[in-house]
Length: 246
Image 1: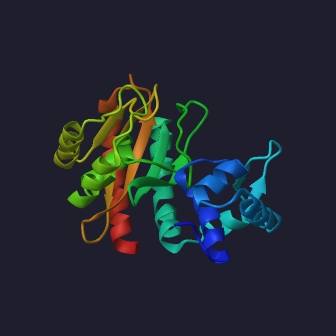
Image 2 (image 1 turned 60 degrees about the horizontal axis):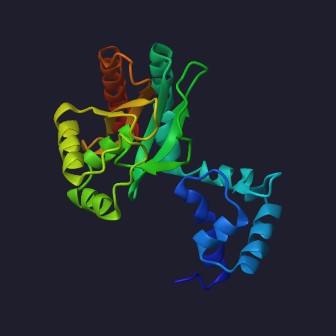
């Protein structure tokens, strides 16, 4: 049902950016927000003048600095990110790989922080972006330790193939999640992006529940025996810090 109130229309426009794309055309925004083009044009224009969205030279739009600053103040995410950064920096110094922190938001993995360097393999993840739970290392961890109902919903929504290596069979996915619970580590090879391998471990809170996932994204041929112990140690150390302060 299309949003009725002005506030509902504005929220629908802003929510259009929550699906993982950095930039959207006006037509794409209106389609996702279920708004007529004329209404969307007027409201997006006002949001742009207010700094909540930014119009790019090619006419597309992205989240503006003003909205980003407001979102960065979300208490839970900011606190978790602040606790995690020292461990992520240490992990990057040891591995020189992409280091990522994510939490589950609905049926997606929401990335709170990412560290990378000139030698890191390119990835599609970005801070504030969302990626599928079934095809990413952090997503596999978050899904493995989520209620079974969440897995059922992910499967029902369809396991899309992002690459030719993506696990799209529900039985194979459930078996992979059982292996994550058994070993405490998720490994995905070229399932989200060709040329990358993701290794992730859970971050737990005071009650033992998984609150986030910490990962390394490197090249498929990397020797995981060298990086997994370092990743697991960092995730456990962060878990102790989270248990005491988060």
